Amino acid sequence: MDASYYLGRIAERREQYNEAISWYLRVSEGEYLLEAQTRIAIMMAKLGYLPKAREQFSMLRQELDNAEQRIKLYLKDFVVLEELEQYEQAMNLLTRGLDEFPGNTDILYSRAMLSEKMDRVDLMERDLLRVLEIAPGNVAALNTLGYTLADRTDRYSEALVYIQKALQAQPDDPAILDSMGWVQYRLGNFDEAEHYLRRANALIDD
Image (tube, rainbow, N blue to C red; front, side, top):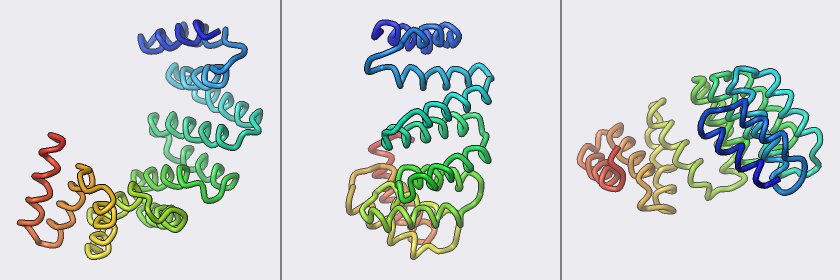
């Protein structure tokens, strides 16, 4: 069974999606069973059969009692929809996930990132604040909220507070250094902005 799963992964990497599905269908038991079934849904989406892919994800979620696995399936289903730019469907999916698992920070954070793509900054902020209410030290939420407030609003002082907290937790993270450079720029502190942006660029040439 393990061999069938790995042959499916090889076919998938070669973008031979129909062949990958045929290999995954041969996995009928063992530790890779759920992952193989999940990959089938992803392959269906890549082949253009999105409704069938969604049915597969839904069926798998209904069959599982394990909350952690159900959450992972929500997130994998979301990634498929996001990659296909099916944002409204993705938003509805994540909202259903939160109805089932209220307060799950992974789903909340995913919906926040999607909301920013949909220009719904108010919903993004609300979800990130909820993440920080549950997990005050969540660095990704701190940095994302700070950067977005600096980039999409004029609430620069608030943005600075969030980014400072993130930077205190991870002082050498280039993404957070970049955020600090951007908020300092927006505040008109150009020397400070250059300092942080140069540090970020030295760590990752972007």
